[in-house]
Image (cartoon, rainbow, N blue to C red; front, side):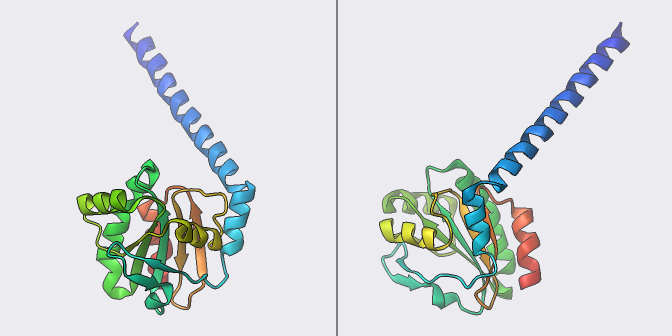
Length: 182
């Protein structure tokens, strides 16, 4: 009787694992085959769009300031749980690879006071830019006209977009793309 219980429980666990795998595979396929995904992929292998946005101190920052660096531009908001989950990995990557030429730049599509509070609490040390409509225009220029958050573009030292991610970007995946560019 005890052996049957173990078998039934084991089959249940296997069934849950298979259901999770199938669900995540279907969601990835759907996420990667929509018009928004096609628009994001169309940005890859193009020269990065320009932007000038204020940082948290109100100083205007031009994307050209980071020419010659591997640049990761991340559009996010404080109210976005996946955005909040990915930021610690981005902070870690910036710390580990910054001296080798990596630069993260966060562009918050949110209210300045909320962004400042969140950045202070988390201890984000890479540049965070804000700018209301201009920040949204930058997101659109980077292929995010559907307003997905988070939305991340990885750009090589020559300014070419090598990868675009709609949705949460795993730290290991980001590192996999970034390391060869350094």
